[in-house]
Image (cartoon, rainbow, N blue to C red):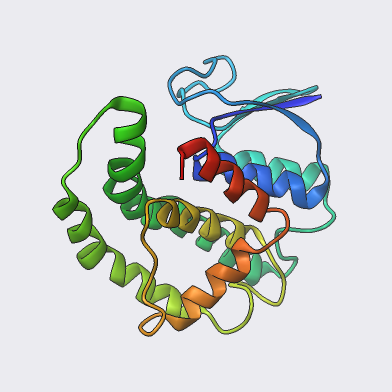
Length: 210
């Protein structure tokens, strides 16, 4: 059986877990922290790592595309060329832009540092990031949402990636203002209610003591 390496709470590990759940792919889960994963599986020491009968892979985007090719249905990447590219773009937007603010500036300082490293945090620094760095990201998403899902009319890797980043934001106790970003709030709630994601949120809350 395949093995997924990576601790709960990671948006990237969560992304792969949702893809597996959507496709009905079974795997063993070894909850290792970044830096402690076997470098033969993840050469950069990052999570997630993946290993199956073919060998090891690392990087969530690589793993998710591999799983899509290995088990094409249900499809999580659009068939249309442009929509496919748009889905990849939103995955990148989540993995870089959203992560850059929601991750080290909010979630890490508020949750990971204190819980796992005994670090103290300055609430003012987190609030500043939320007030100054997050709004342009939320404004962009608000303007991109025209239906239930980010790309086309189907749930895709775009929604998995973006939704996963918002899990960490919410776990840190931050939520967009529904009056300013109504589409974003409704959309994220829809993604988080997905049967393949909702149980993972409960699991991560328990793991993080939320």
